[in-house]
Length: 292
Image (cartoon, rainbow, N blue to C red; front, top):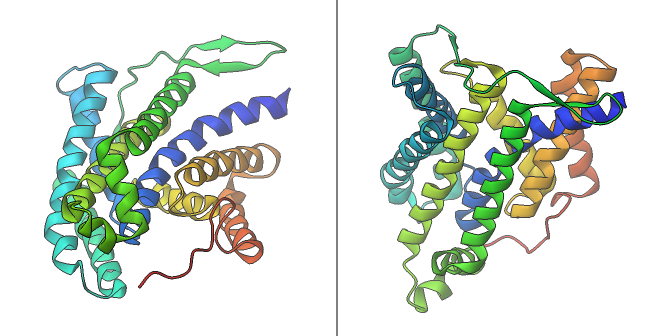
């Protein structure tokens, strides 16, 4: 039963990684860019959620919507200012720009928000629901899991059953052909950033709830681990990002329970190395060759 309890704990943390990984994998799937600023957009989402709850006194859902809106605007602004002018530049230039944007947001956060940790308000009761055999699940874990599943279903609907989703898939397959078919590549890429950043806003609020704290550098490690999850699952593949996120959360929970919490990070990166050695494209990725 203890093993099943750790699986429940792992699914809760893994669902947050999955939401973050979706943002990475969508952007990479469209323009083959690893958006290193994604983790810092998560931080912004967490602080927006924090101020909505602590200062404005809002409940969870309005705070979540506000965080999504703020991160959407931020993501589109970043894309328009930093990435769009480099659309036809070498990938290395765009990659370095992404690192620069990440460092800019981190230092801006430290400058404006200072280095103090802020306690994220507990808007969800700490009570737990008893299941069978002594298993328990907290209301917070349920909320995180349900929110994540709703976001994944919504994302699947947008990508597979809407006009803009079809445009996203067309651009990811062949940008030039999509352009010849009348699809606005720029608008499609901007929408992809908006969608990924909205998910980052969700992840920021969920991270604040999970760790019960906010800090200007709080997005670095979760963002890095979610990137690892996306690579393990097969970066550019949405189901792969989900699977990688859940797998990573479960592995962390099991390592912390049966080993030591200090070994969680080394085991995560060891898992990444092992997966890439055996399957370089990730567990659910396909080798489609390098795009020009």
